[in-house]
Amino acid sequence: MAGLYIHVPFCAKRCVYCDFYSNTEMRFKEPYIRALLKEMDSRREYLEGERLETIYFGGGTPSQLNGADFTRIFEAISRLFNVSEEAEITLEANPDDMCPEYVSLLRDFPFNRISMGVQSFQEEDLRFLNRRHDRAQAIQAVERCQRQGLTNISIDLIYGLPGQTERQWEENLDQAIRLGTPHLSAYHLTYEKGTALYKLLEAGKITPVDEELSVTLFSTLIDKLTSAGFQHYEISNFARPGFISKHNSSYWTGKKYLGLGPSAHSYNGTEREWNPSSLPIYIYGIENGCLATESETLDLYTRYNDFIITGLRTMWGISLKELRTLFGDRLFAYCQEQAESHIRRGSLSNEKGRLTLTKTGIFISDGIMSDLLWV
Image 1 (cartoon, rainbow, N blue to C red):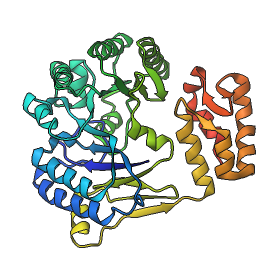
Image 2: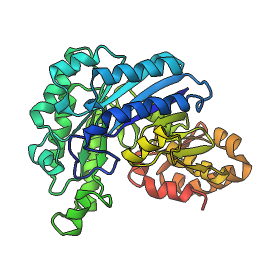
Image 3: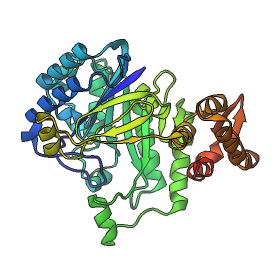
Image 4: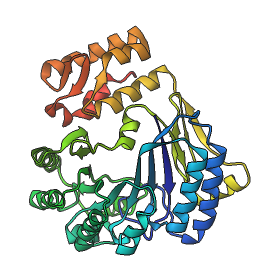
């Protein structure tokens, strides 16, 4: 199993919190498409012929692409890769792009999963985050997709916004549950350097929520969604049975993936590689055969640390047998020794040879992971 990630860097405008690479200059779209197809052709051997089980259009805002763009991209994918008939094919989309005509257009392509960047159903939150849609557009976009048969929908929500109350967060979750979407990703607001949000923080114009409220909001998230029938399968992700994201799960379970487009990352099991986070530099490099990618060869200890961090984020946890096979007796013994105190305190569980976070452990997962890492 392998995955293909396509980074579509275009956004109509920047959200205050976002630190993913994006560009608001649509004049670059045609050169980008040409460069993307050329990169796809030149790197088709990266996955060594493994079948594609997932294809993910991320961004940026992939719903800024039109039908002609998708036609060219999917024709190239079909020609260059072995794609599973059951492949999960995801499009990230903004609610305001999902007008009736656009949703109908998507049915002409093999998309079978939509990841919708809702972020909040509260009007004041959406204005603060500089989102382009309002509450009604978000609800209508989801319902429009459902009527067109695109029912495998994930929505993103953000919590921990300045001034956010527990009641407002509960209302967001209640609305998401009412919509009947089978997957939800929820992320605590982070203040990344270089974003407009970080500048507001530095200027003293906003105050982050305190730790006690953050914990309460996260606890509310877990309780409401699990009570509604969702599996909490990764720290920030919840799915109804049968709707776990295959693509995102491949990241957490160490599967290979090829990333195309500016800032996209690739992983082949022993090495990470990433493209420059600049659309003009990316286009120039592809067109002239001199794309300045960066790479990192992963030694044994780096791969062990990645195994710990990604595995413990999920409900499947870490297989101690697999750990021993992959990393040897020394790291196997080290992991067991470091885990012991957390098992005694009830924040880690060791059942049937798998280490998993307990519900208590989820709230202190960063500390547990840090203790198990090789430093």
